[in-house]
Length: 213
Ligand SMILES: NC(=O)c1ccc[n+]([C@@H]2O[C@H](COP(=O)([O-])OP(=O)(O)OC[C@H]3O[C@@H](n4cnc5c(N)ncnc54)[C@H](OP(=O)(O)O)[C@@H]3O)[C@@H](O)[C@H]2O)c1
Image 1 (cartoon, rainbow, N blue to C red):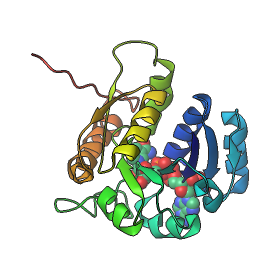
Image 2 (tube, rainbow, N blue to C red):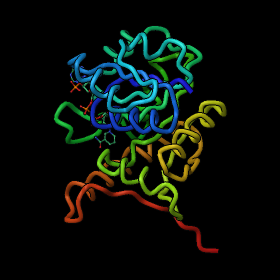
Image 3 (cartoon, rainbow, N blue to C red):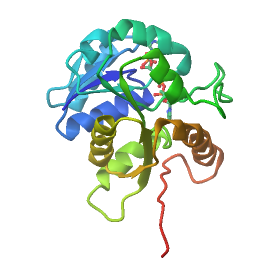
Image 4 (cartoon, helix red, strand yellow):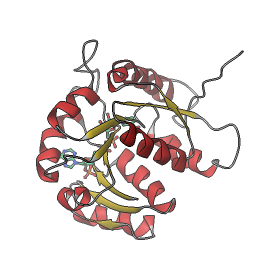
């Protein structure tokens, strides 16, 4: 798949690197330095390259949306028309100080993004784990059982694409239903952040759901 990365920071940089290692054609975009994007692409290997948000979105089978909430409009305007594209968003609708959600209860960041990027297939995924755990999950991908990763969206094709990327990183995708379920997964992501950064065990934290029948 060709995967465009919009926002090549902690999440976009790491997920893009892992997508490239899994064999995808990755374009890193939207960092404050082009040199950073080139270094990320070089280290990711394969056919990864640096580009503009427009390059990253053009011809992409999936676009990873990984910017701070406050940068959403800017990156969308630079990406151009995303109609028909699958957008996998890990962005949380945080306030400028990153102390709380600015959207919730009656909507979610993912739903608001879907309104901004009309015609795109938005899937909410990867937002419930800290970036620090991603490489560890990838390294352990051959071991069972895998950690879970919830995702949600309204479009079957988008969800299929997202589930396959989730598997490529080493998680077991858990389909949580339609996009409005992001109203629950986004606050859950803050619980994960609290445990990862506020607890004693360190931020390399993932989760696994188990059913007891
Ligand atoms: N970090 C996590 O563990 C985590 C977990 C779950 C969800 N999330 C969510 O995922 C999204 C991305 O988080 P992140 O931690 O990857 O953020 P980040 O490290 O700050 O990355 C954001 C990217 O946007 C770029 N950017 C370009 N222009 C910018 C500008 N003018 N001001 C600020 N940034 C600009 C940054 O550039 P530079 O590279 O030059 O800084 C960076 O590449 C956020 O919505 C966050 O809430 C994060």
